[in-house]
Image (cartoon, rainbow, N blue to C red; front, top):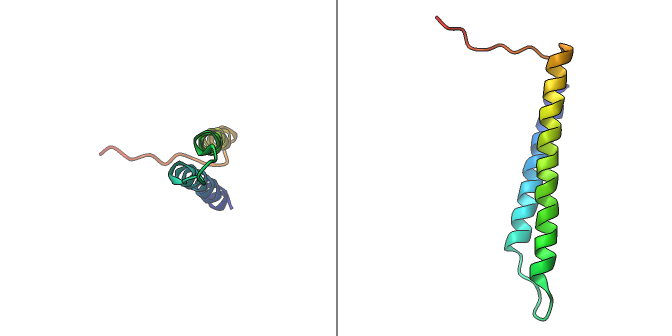
Length: 77
């Protein structure tokens, strides 16, 4: 269950990044103001990506603090 939530969060982050790329590459119709509109949509998508990344990081730290997940680490020697 935990792995599915983390995977879902990663797909959300990647989807938001792909959305920002789409709006960056999108061309507006002649006569429109595509630059301002594209910039607004791209900014919102990137802000959502950052928000989802921070939320995922906080959730992982909280799960570690509560003991739901354990770090395994790499043994030395």
